[in-house]
Image (cartoon, rainbow, N blue to C red; front, side, top):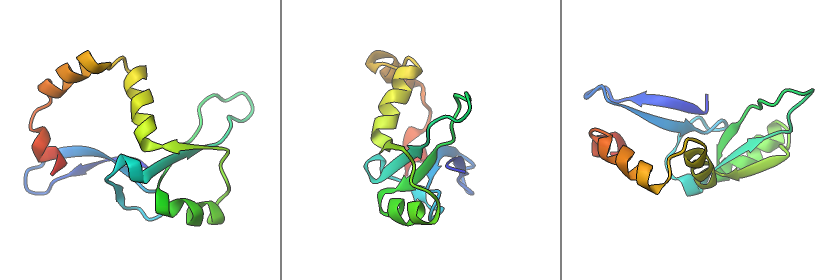
Length: 106
């Protein structure tokens, strides 16, 4: 469950988060997280992704397998924004339209 929503018990606000597949804790800093994936198998172009704290990469890979590819979550966010057509201008517009963002990130 690497991508999840956390619901604040008091406010009932939700925030999307990445959960480390090794320690099961929230990855709070994009520069402290990686995502890993393997080559697609047998013509399937959809692959599973694993999210890990940088400190959890080696222990996870020892107990599972060494993936072929990995990248920092900070890079993932840039690719994701690009693939969703959220360049700087549209991202600024989306940011303005996001309600109570400070409450979501605290």
